Length: 206
Image (cartoon, rainbow, N blue to C red; front, side, top):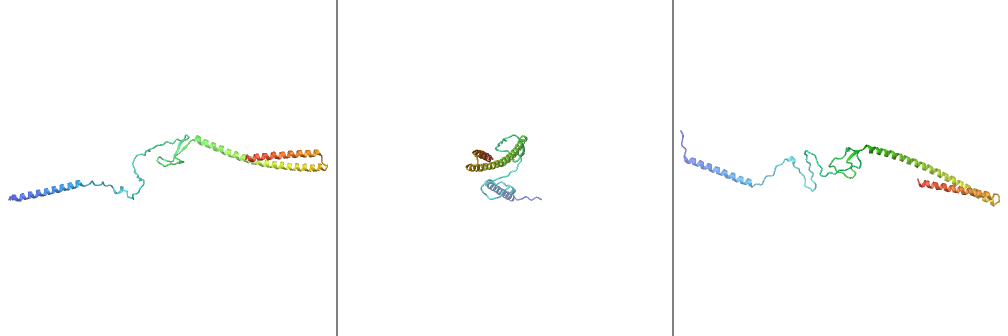
């Protein structure tokens, strides 16, 4: 059969339950207030994305991969002095260049043909110069030989003139012979002088 509980016992249970719930509520309020006063926690990051190193002064280079295309901030157009077709691109945008750096290689059949023609003309001019130098050298040798011959003739004419003068003094040679010897000597001396001038001019023009 059912036994009726004592109302005092029920009252004590209700009071105990109320005290427990009041204590739990107080703890919740205190914890909530403490949590609200805490500073926000730092965001978490993956360990493999962190960089570790010694702090130092200088530029910090960061490499980032991403989809898309790079666009130059400052574009400078370089115009070629002659027309042509781009044959090969040596450097791409972003490369460091200096004076004399080849950026692209261009081709132009007309200019290439002109260069070949100029090279042929240069080779022909070099060959002509070599021939002219050889001819001049031969001419100088010939003039040197002519000078030697003229000097020899001058010497012979001078010796004959001196000999005939001595013979005239002795009454053996005539005055006409001495005059003929003098004329021959003057002609030989003039020929030697002209040959020497020709040799000097050729030597100076070499």
